[in-house]
Image 1 (spheres, one colour):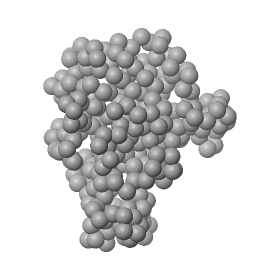
Image 2 (tube, rainbow, N blue to C red):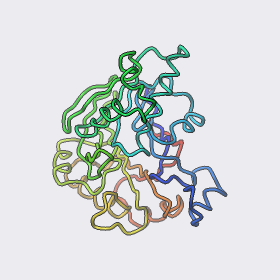
Image 3 (cartoon, rainbow, N blue to C red):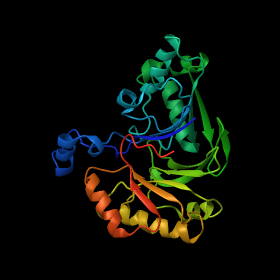
Image 4 (spheres, helix red, strand yellow):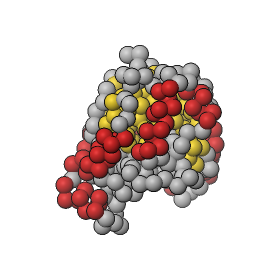
Length: 288
């Protein structure tokens, strides 16, 4: 069953950030609710989640258990998106009798090298990863950019993002073909899109577009591998002009850092006059 819920919508520091007293973080501590953001994660369906990161345990407090999750689509290997401790949680779930299938991790090309690092390093999960593979607790899969696969009834195609993870890999942006015929595109952490990624997307149609907007209302440096709201606005124009987006497409903005609060994000979105329906996502928001 589709769920389509944002489990986290912040950038790596979270909002409020632990070592910060900026106005945005102070407001989040005072008002809570949509002003607080856990690290980014999106529950697509009963069985599929995109990124299982640093706040996964506390996300399960708010949104229910992860017992039915069998598939983790990894955007990249930064630890706000990929938390290896969740393999230990899956192991405990199996020992308690609540899981009898592996927790499948999907990574693109060079990101897959982290699996060998986990296997060889006793500092990671006490060196238990190879044993868990033998016991069918976890299983790892390598995806290729531009190649479609099917995961539990969802068509999945990764595209190359302009962002570098811990294994020096480029991030994976996922086109997800939903059972109802709609296409959802998950673009975290994308950076400003490579021309070849834009060209590849010209062959596809996006109905629901989830985009990073890490920089919020702040300027973004030319060398940055994240986008601000103006960058996203320009990208929407390009994708709309080439037919990837259409007049009924809906945009959700996420992966927001602590320099721009929720209300200011909404204000800037209105000022920029996005040409398609646009929403600032918040933790707990359901869209499917």
